[in-house]
Length: 126
Image 1 (cartoon, rainbow, N blue to C red):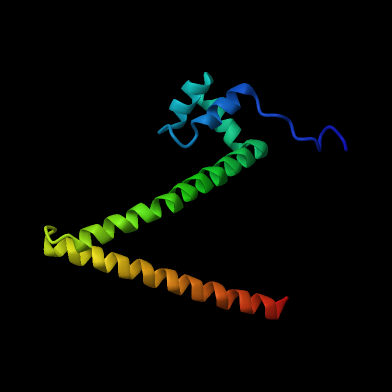
Image 2: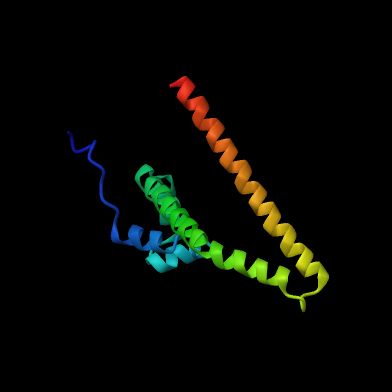
């Protein structure tokens, strides 16, 4: 493998920029955190290796958020059920909670059905 085919490592400022890529509001703020000029960050954005690092970071960030959401679903369902069952809750809150629970259950059933149908089609194709 030639040196041109070996990916170069990200610099320390690039790594610092990636640490805050999704949490700071602007390129200027990211550049300030990484202690570089904003034009440098704009140049990095055109670099394929840096773009790949952003995609990987985005994928990991999404995976982390999804894991957190999955972990929170029981508490959220319990909250909706408590609101629905609380006689002190206003009728519109009780109705809204009941509707939300039914809609989420329906969506889950629909997704399960779609997944089963897709798996069946994949088996027939492959």
